[in-house]
Image (tube, rainbow, N blue to C red; front, side, top):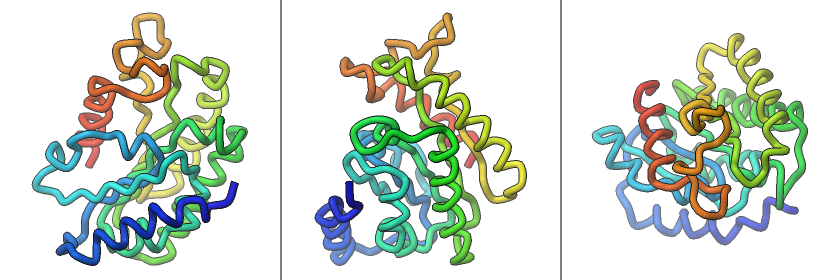
Length: 198
């Protein structure tokens, strides 16, 4: 339950950065396993430099705890947060208000440094495996959208309509066999949504 669980992964990123020419003012994508599984976003966003920083089944509070190493270190022009399913399972069991508050805390920490120009927050994604989460996700989206109206630099990206079938439920075509993680078709929709906004 401790954010220290990700210390080794954070250290691995730092070691890789030590031998690399870091891009200037990149777009940093932070989150958990969904970020680590997002294929080819760097190519799709070119020539804009993209830094992917995912930590296993991390929750938003873990990203906040490791903010300096995962985000602040790169002095990003833009930050993208992609929350994972672990906000509701495995690592945590958040209510809509708790998840919205955790996201606000991360965005406020980022704003305190006065570097990031824009902060994009992907709304939690509805999944095939956990339909019982859908109401909480809808409530979270409402809270985030209402809050973002007061924050000029924050944009909420709701990809759920793009990942739904004709019945409005998550479409099997966009998910891997586990019913949780997106496949290449699902990630392509996330990428296109991000491209149209950035």
